[in-house]
Image (cartoon, rainbow, N blue to C red; front, side):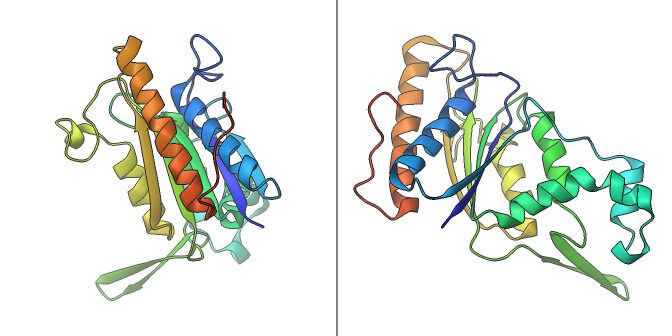
Length: 231
């Protein structure tokens, strides 16, 4: 059985295919999950909505606690790290992490940055040691995890080779953080033209959904997987 961790990061609630002001990234992540469940209904899905319920941001107390060896932590330190521990446990148990994440002002939402800050944890998801003047780092997550990034953008041209590629700090930043803790297998689909609306936006969303359908087939290993009409 495969375990999927489904995360939504948009501040918009609802899906754009169901609500007038709904989220495009939520629409895309839901599309992926519907396709997956249609093909593999026995798999386990854990859902976390960091857009609606963001993790607590890192504080000085959090840093103090995280960099204190587990055996030396005081009771308050365990309290401070409790949410982070829960997020890390979910991530470690997942085989595939599916994230719906919009672009806000060229980067990821603050809610998802708080998530990343809570899961990039010394002693839990990465390790390091000093040897003289040198410091070495290593990831601690098991190999084989996959990350699926499903994004939405207001303008067009943020993808590889596009005129705005250098201004895209969503996928590159997320890939860097996840690679650091051991997740190297990353798949990305994005819809653009949100600020344009109309036919351009709908065409981009439709193309993204077709890419997602193909990605579901690829990751499920089932070339006959198709999404039900209307999903």
